[in-house]
Length: 524
Image 1 (cartoon, rainbow, N blue to C red):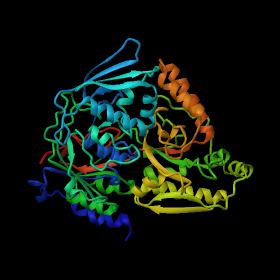
Image 2 (image 1 turned 120 degrees about the vertical axis):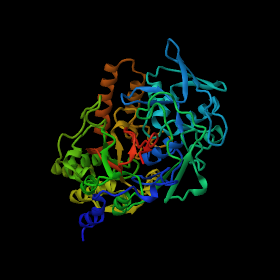
Image 3 (image 1 turned 135 degrees about the vertical axis):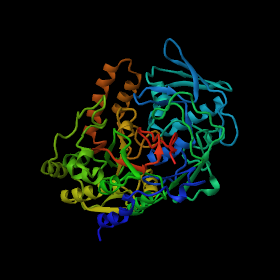
Image 4 (image 1 turned 90 degrees about the vertical axis):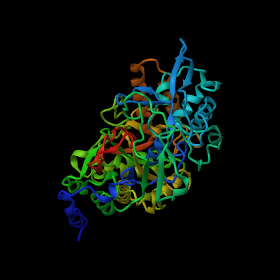
């Protein structure tokens, strides 16, 4: 029996009206059980760009500012702020009564230490800190940032929703070296981490932070009031799609973050389940080269692979439904303010790619190592297409399978791999500063996995950050795109959306560029 037939049989009883499940009473009714795409084992918001780690962190930690659905920065932990007339001095005052999960009050010193640690890891945070002359606590609730040069996007950077998010932790944790992840995730967010029930790779348990004080404004994306309506949230590992569908259909779990398109019709026929695209902006598929090792230390080899890529081959594996995917060769994503294809190959051309490879002098007999996270079906499907493409180009390919958490660890090291694939939310890619794959800082803590090194891209990105007008930023975004595309920073593999599914009795399920789980309730 194939998977579709099995799932049809499995879900058939759920198509009939059934009474509320007995397990949805008492403690079960007060627990939200969620199956993320993958379960993070990294509990540090400043240590990885993994959006599974980011989504966990949004529940445990809080931010100084957050974006609404118009991408406008809104205050979150901050009560008020002042900007000097010259735009160089920013003074921030925290809301009263903010408390960490260990009972300690949130102070300005915690914020300063957290921003410094975040800025040592995050490319965009690093740009802000390099433009900063001083960052100091003024008193218990106030800190001041003084810029040494113009930086036009201070609030936008502090509000950024893409990993790594500038989340606030106690100073004692923020003083952990940025090269080492914290293992005690203590924040001030709406839920606290329950260490005694944690099983790495299997289950993360969170409990309501009773001292949390939501903002009074309505919740919009990451901004506004975050109300922890459930006593507990359980994040569960469940790699098998059939098991996920069964668990949701029977009410064993409440929410599935991301599903392959071939199972959606089964769930859409189930009146006890709701299927919806939560992030309308969707995702970008990514083919990333390791610029530090042969053969992709050679720009001609990178460019040749980019010339051969046909996005139509990649989209079915991640989008599933034709209406869920589109070809898009813009680093910034399509439908975004800075969309452009400057510098990109115009169309796939396998023969031209072969000619450029021959010109490059690369030794194609040396195996190209592709990191292949087999437990992440979407990412894994991208790797299989590239494996076939490289083979047709004459490369020898070594496909190394692993789980997703091992993948994140492997890609952070410059040795032992040549290509990885991933997906990232389009909102995280839509500007030259948010898109970490356009970081041209090279090796070292300021760079990002793959480590392209291009001083001109970095100069242009700094100019983008300092620009005083939107027209100037658009011109700079175009120049950055052209330069990075011609240098082969990475290859976009198309743009797609994905559906989530949850029990129909859940109410007020948020939408937005991340999996936000606050404010959700249960109608019965």
